[in-house]
Length: 369
Image (cartoon, rainbow, N blue to C red; front, side):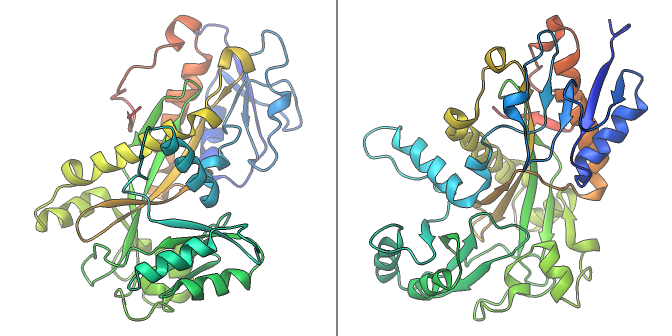
């Protein structure tokens, strides 16, 4: 069926490890040709997420186009925007709706805000009612552990934000994390693929990013024990790589650890992850979902969801990354699956294109919504 069919792609982001791998895969194939990144007539754009020309896509009659980002995905990928997206969704759910139990209590604080222009008054009030709570301030647009502060009082958090210049999310800090051998904290990175028909797929393999040193509940300034971001661990800890190669633990080893606690990854953790992911995209649908017939192009996007598991084996959503790197061990497999699940299904003929099978066993992704 694919005789004489060929397509073109441009890559405008030479820094993406995942899409660099997608490019290598497409260049090895007969049916794809890479053309100069300045071209406007192409089938597939591997775009620079900060400069995406959405308004220039879908303008050539008969030219099928796809792009590897959704317009407006910051509604999930910026921390304050995600909080607002979930709040707006919850408000549609009826009489006295409550926020999802997997999202830590969050207040949006703007540096130097005056006269009720942010949520600092509510934070102080909440802090008085919950004096034992610990807080974490995260830069709304931050990544890689930049601009993070942990502290025991709401006032301290506000003071910190006011000393900065941007919008922060001040969140309830989960101070009872599940700890790995060596009493070490970790978070879980999962890869999630959203296709042009708004089907949501979660990659079956994930990675734990682990801390090098024991969790220290009495000292919040010791970032190595609290923040598992690779860049922080690698830069500040002399024990980086001591427990796990590159401070990465994969799901098989994590499951073996959970089994020693009488729990199972597939039964106790993964269903929570799938449910959280599914709810996030339901909440974002009014802002994200497009009618491909109307916009005349297919968006898709790979997201990195970061989770924390507490000592009760409850999963919490920490944040969502819109341009995630992939663990080296998984990168090629994820890139191949993006080609199969999204790129091939967009460009192979109409009749085989519109119905993605529910769980394509040949890929590492499982459809959750």
